[in-house]
Length: 149
Image 1 (cartoon, rainbow, N blue to C red):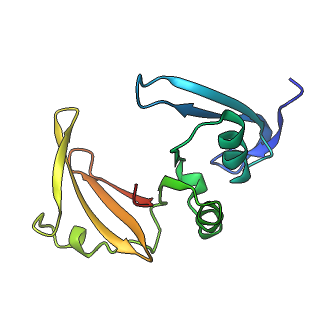
Image 2 (cartoon, rainbow, N blue to C red; image 1 turned 180 degrees about the horizontal axis):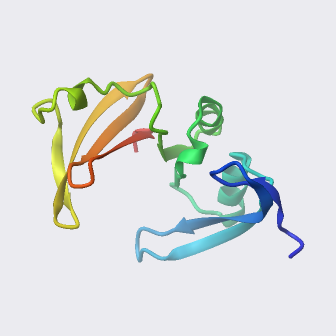
């Protein structure tokens, strides 16, 4: 393929690869646009270019935790894009004190996912909504950052 370029994966191994960006419609919940991007391009400008090229309005960017950096959040904000991005486990943006108490009284509630409760709480941080999700069955903690949508 002519489009594959050396880029790194989550283990920081540089290999030829491509990135695929999809846009999904909420109704009928199907892909409505895609763009193939060379593997060496990991830039927020790809989102803005795809949005302009597709002509789609009212967009929320959903990215993986690899995009979770102060630089990328600033770039997304500068482009006035709404977004949802998981944070890395070692992120210092989130107050984990409700988790450490072992009690759910400081949580905002829960929702059911695959027949088990996922507990969550949200906090504001510098005008952004931060959410922590706890899956007791898996013993995992998930943190996410979003602009209010």
